[in-house]
Length: 189
Image 1 (cartoon, rainbow, N blue to C red):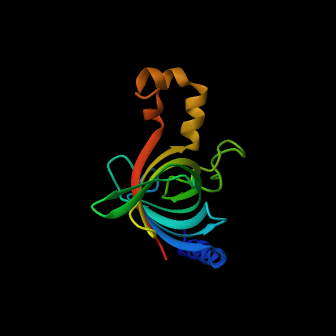
Image 2 (tube, rainbow, N blue to C red):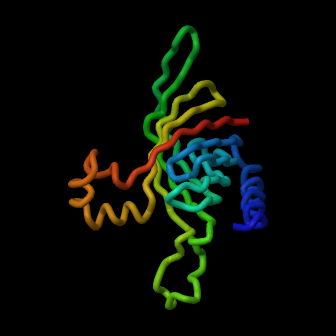
Image 3 (tube, rainbow, N blue to C red):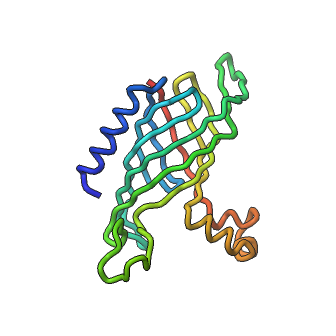
């Protein structure tokens, strides 16, 4: 992914954010977003959140170094449990859902089919759709930390096609085989 594409994506996001009710910055690790993933976004119509970000995965024994960009949507359920600890107020939003388009970049991923494959043989491997669930702890009115569970589009398709394989080989009704998890922090400005 070129720097120009990343810059265009972020500029488009900043253009959208101007009409937002609230602007936020999000920093996440894991859950298919990389070792570190930074996003900027906005809140629209109270419970709808859109953000764009960049992420990084270091080189490991089983894969190449990778950079990525994302465009994400999250619906944050307005239902929240409130509680106090030592005169400090907190809140928990247990059920929030979203999805993201993730574009990864390293030498084995492609957006356009390489010439060595017949037309239509593969779908682009660099573009993925991710579905996610978040449980959010509100530290203050402007700062949140969250636990995120994600499922990749191809993982969900595999699970639907062969649920017996996953149920026989993984825990939690086989979902352990197709889910990833991570943590993040979000601050509203």
